[in-house]
Amino acid sequence: MLKRKILIVMVIIGTWIAGCSINESEDILTPGGRVALPEELSAGESTVFNSTSKAFDTPASWVTGELSALFLEGDALYDNPRVSDGNPVNGGLGPVYAGYSCASCHNDAGRTKSTLFTDGGTGQYGFSSFLTFIRTPNGQNHKNYGRVLHDQAVYGSEPEGKVRATYTEEHYSFPDGETYSLITPHYEIYDWYADSIPVEQLEMSVRTPLRHVGMGLMLAVDKDEIKELASIQYPEYGISGEINWITERNTKQIGLSGHKAQHADLTVELGFLSDMGVTNDRYPHEVSEGQSQVTGEYGIQITTKEMAAVDFYMHALGVPARRAVQNETVQKGEDLFYQAKCHLCHTPTLHTQKEGVKLLDGTNLPWLGGQTIHPYSDYLLHDMGPELGDDYSQFNASGDEWRTTPLWGIGLQEVVNGHSHFLHDGRARNFTEAIMWHGGEGDVSRQLFSKMTQEERETLIMFLRSL
Ligand code: HEC
Ligand code: HEC
Image (cartoon, rainbow, N blue to C red; front, side, top):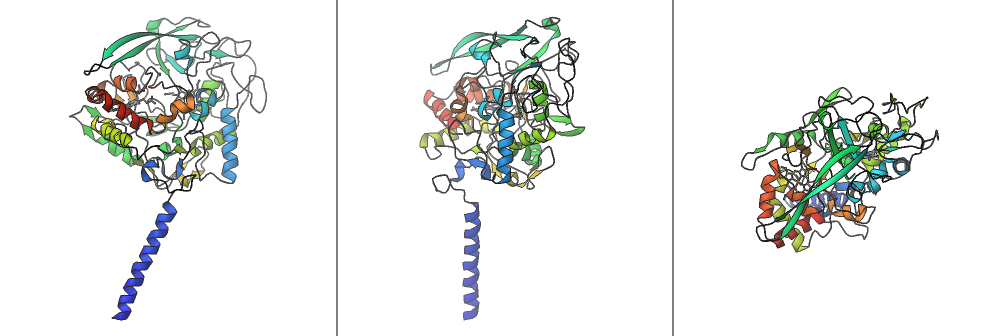
């Protein structure tokens, strides 16, 4: 009897010790040595405790040893401006381009402030940092132009055209009297280097860069969870998300990246070719091939191995930890976020698939697997109404549909990139305007937010700032 009791006690102690060690291995320490609070962990083991201008550009803690070297190699290739000559290290830019490095548009892995807002467009010399997709109304490339309008060119060549943005401003007030205004952009392309394309033959979509927060975890996300979210409908609120089923590399897959979820990877090869004019094994032909200004041999301007380093770098970036999670206003703001039904699209919690995720070169990253993450996105498409629409469909995504933008890290965009422009073309100048642009399926949230008191609206925004 005594023996049995001792055994039971031993089993209990054993279980307790085992429990402790499991907890201990799961504990994530902050740089100050304190155990992180669960609410702070935006991305499990990939959470980083950095709220400076490098918050988006810090490796996750599992990046050590050889992986650190690969991270730094990818980081440099991502940051360093490319040049036009045949320089084997960083050549290949142009002849026409939209950006001169990934970081020129994604400064510090964020969303570079655009001349769209400061100069009303490309500007004479200004560097835009946005992408303007162009095509004919039946989805073809225009003669002499590619998929993207290249508004920059190397010495001796001409940009394909320039973009001008003008805005009309409308003033509104909330039921409680607080005022706000929304600016509607109107875009025009001028200085076409070849044939001018008349407006009626032009479909265009102007987009600002996306923050590179949690890119690897986004690709590692449990696809069954996304399918499950797509199957849930909220007829009472007019909300139903849709998967953008895309075909890439001859495979039908769930689109995750891009403002319309039109890609299933981190678009490294496409970014180098289409945004910068840097040819590679997947895309060996200059975007401007066929234009009179492209002459001679250009060859392959970046290797597949180098692009794999950039792919790794983006997967390995950490996600900033949330701040002020115990602040009462922030907690009240979180309740209001749910009350305004924001969470029905900006899904607070998702999980990554157990096995982790594979890079383009096949390397597996197990550290990204089995994580509980808080992207505040369902990665699904929602019809946001004609005011936000642009007539530019991509796979299942119609002109009015956009992917729910993940909100993790959004509270640090101002610190990282020095501006608070939001939405696909950056037309919202702050959080309030971003919410008030939500139409279509997002109208329910816009209405509920409007009906709040000014203090409640500010409280909800305090929560967004903590993300
Ligand atoms: C000219 C500016 C520009 C340059 C240069 C650029 N990007 Fe982007 N990037 C954008 C814009 C704009 C978007 C949104 C595009 C969309 O919706 O299709 C974007 C989107 C992305 C996304 C999707 C992010 C998400 O949350 O879904 C990834 C990944 C990305 N870029 C990677 C890169 C890489 C890698 C490079 C360098 C090889 C690069 N970009 C160069 C402007 C740029
Ligand atoms: C019906 C789904 C839906 C609901 C509900 C919703 N959103 Fe959104 N949200 C989106 C989509 C889709 C976008 C991208 C729209 C675009 O870029 O034009 C977006 C964009 C945003 C952005 C801009 C992000 C950025 O970096 O550009 C913010 C901020 C935002 N939502 C906050 C909220 C808040 C706060 C609420 C609740 C008051 C809310 N949303 C409710 C779908 C939704």
